[in-house]
Image (cartoon, rainbow, N blue to C red; front, side, top):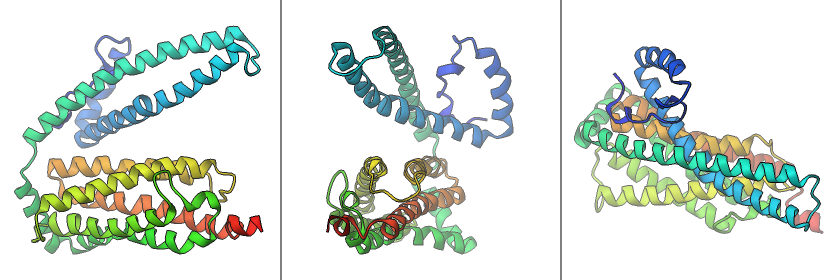
Length: 307
């Protein structure tokens, strides 16, 4: 059986009205039967990637495309073919309308799936009891999960130590200066530990569990959004000496949160511990590699170059 909360995520090429319906009907039922969890997770990842790529990034790129094309049509910049430019603008308008139409369908399905999943999910008390049992039966996994909280702090400490040696473009982020970002990463390690390693495991915390959860998620998602935006800026910098694959790899690694959250909601706590640890370890490991490569390969930062 497919997870109740994800039955509604049918859209795009698998919709009943599309010509590829017969092909999907032949391929998807066997996949659903052979691996229900993988099938549901794949549908959830597709929905998340569609929203990210086609509803968030597509409009941003489209605005720039239309701006440049209109400048070319007005004669402000060189234009090799007005006909080709008009054709591409018309095609982009049609594709954008299609993205938005599919996006509305998918967002409605996501809302329905979230409502169904919430009603079918195990209770918080049940999930906490499972985690407490895993502390005895899977101590190494739980230890790795708890230690992963401080991956943020490790990245913040290394970034702060490398700041004097980094090129100028790498000494600031989209939202704040590099020093503030490093301090926020250091703080995030402590907040993550209090929420994930203490409160989530059912141990008593000062004040309330909801408070630590709110603080942790608020800062974590702010840092994630800042890191994703900053990755684009750093990767485009001429001062970057790190491997070009690190920027997209770090952004894609944020998707590990999706299976982590799904496993938590479904009450599958062993996969939850593994995926949530990956959510902490993988993006920070990539960020550390990027920072260290840039600090080692950059020109003693931009300051040495300026001298």
